[in-house]
Length: 252
Ligand code: MF3
Ligand code: CO
Image (cartoon, rainbow, N blue to C red):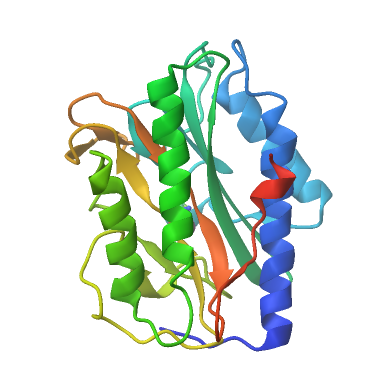
């Protein structure tokens, strides 16, 4: 289902999104060698509850944790564990919350201490790809315009777009219509209208786009073992431009 949101509802979604970004900002100080991903998960669980909200992913289709923490060649849905972060790791932290019955969803890719310039460039490019998509999230455009802009930008840099997972509408549900693929054709798909709130979330591999699902049924990894990065903003489609509801400035 696709639901159009009122200005009041968008404010509530924004409140949830801002809490997600505050959670990321809180976690940033713990992204260092020796921190287990389970410790990050516990910190986020407590932080979200302390802010009168609930983790959105916990128990969603049976997902066991608050965060999806995807390290290095994990593309998405990495399950927190006792494994510790190491120098040079790249770490995507996907977080969702629900507060006042409205969801917020955002993902940020961090790195642990020293990583190659090549890897930093890759991470920055995936973030830029997200903003290339967001630039087109306004009336007069179609979903395919967002998809195409992301794909064009990352492929020009020699990276590849993951096909298995897509962005989505969001509101009273974590996942609503429409799907927002990170690959596609310009001038195709649903027309964007004010009142639509969507999560745009490029998942990009530095190597081949091929992925494989681990036996746990969640963890998606690159087939070739290459790095993968993921950024996600929840945005409200605007008349002339999108309003970004989550907030990377709080993190940076
Ligand atoms: N952030 C993911 C998304 O945008 C949600 C994680 S799936 C869950 O779709 F099951 F872990 F919740
Ligand atoms: Co999402």
